[in-house]
Image (cartoon, rainbow, N blue to C red; front, top):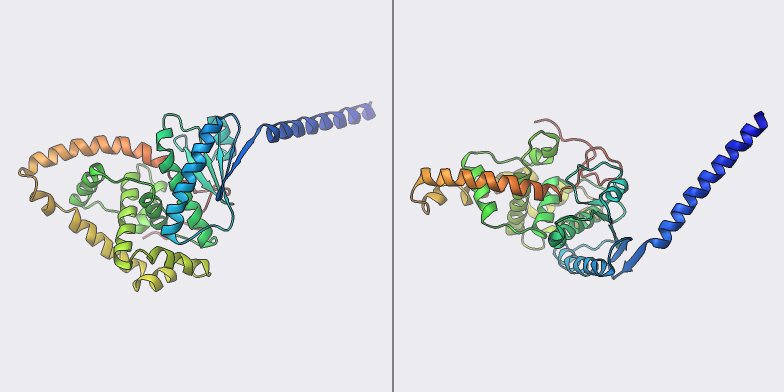
Amino acid sequence: MVMKSLQMKKISLFLCFLLIFSLCFWQACTAKTLRSQNFIIQYEELNDSYAEMVSETAEKSFTTISGALGQKPGNVITVILTSTEKEFRELTNGTLPDWSTAVAMPGNRIIISPLPGMKMNLDRILAHEIVHVVLFDAAGGNFIPRWFHEGCAETFSGQWGIQGRLYMTWKVSWGKLMTFDEIEQVFSAQGADVTLAYDQSMLALKQLITIGGKKVLSEILDSMRSGDNFENSFTKATGMTVREFEQVYLAAIAKAYGKRTLLTIIPSTWTFILLLAIVVYIIKKRRNKRLMSQWEIVDAAENIIRFRPNPPDEQ
């Protein structure tokens, strides 16, 4: 009786192994691959034309991004196009929030959800994730602050129009700008202002280019690729510390988007404040949902890129 039981267990284990092997073999056979100069596009239940569009879009973005950052990963970037939300959640181990649509991962990989109703934003989403992969590769695993990561990603993928300017003016007027440390911790707080974190990061990056010139980004990353940390690399390229630069860029934002600037244009301050409050409310509701879908969550997942090995010190 015992022998029969052991035989049954062996047979069951063999059948399970055979089933798993068959599923893996079936997936390998059904998966499609499209190769280009810098990318490998992997997909299954999707049209070839869509994969070709992704490949062409990725190559165009890569040319701009690698040229601006002066960096090119040593290996090609793999873009995995999932056909269902379930597949996307499984490949990311269920570590991402429901609103997430794409993520950059270690090993020069990007995983993209089916993007329901968002395929028109594919170019921006791809560019955003490509920037993160390029930065992570250049850093060699060393810490890059989130304002720099997201500032680069937004600069080379975003479009900042009148809505963003109005929202920034509102925040400046009420003295509610974030510090770099607050941006670093923004997602660990309930009700965090993701929109402001993105916008400030982008403005910080633009101010950095204004001060250091177009080559300042590549100079910082070249130094990091050689093994130096971000703080030292930043100081070498700019001649100032990160904290000194933070004060400079915050002052620049306050000057560019302060109340006095608007009062020279808007005849009625109270009318302006009322209209701005209404506009900001609408903007924040719409933009938060769209922008948050492009931010990689890296809190505890081992397979997601860690922007920082430990949480920043409490101030």
